[in-house]
Length: 181
Image (cartoon, rainbow, N blue to C red):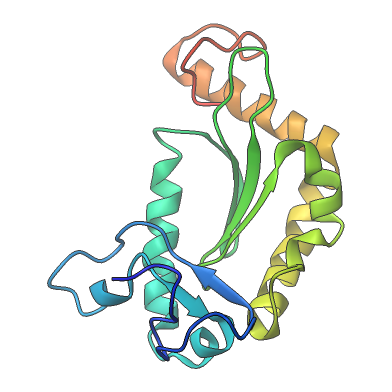
């Protein structure tokens, strides 16, 4: 395990400015052979060629999806992606929105207020190669349901209403302190 000093696949530093990604936490505890790559940085071109990319990415994706049961709100999901947002204070917007890809350990993250620019193409500013191609495909699907910040807000409201209906809580337009969304 190592963080963002060197690519955990090729061992070279990140000073070469090649596009990179990083994972967070441990998706594969010891003694799993992928443990040593957890919580580390990777050049996207190294990751693209790595034979364990799919297993590794899907482990992180499953963990990220499960995280929404305790913090933040899962807004939508599609074939190989999830769209979620962070928690917020009552009557406020979340700080961030993100799209996670199942086949790449890439978290496409933006501040909530920046969604319009993000969905219009800013999401790809730090990606390249096959990761950019996969993110572009996913974001085209996401843009069908959340093409702008108003649509994103409607998704969140619907998710909060569904969550509150399941637990018999206060209406979603009046989230309570500590609510998931």
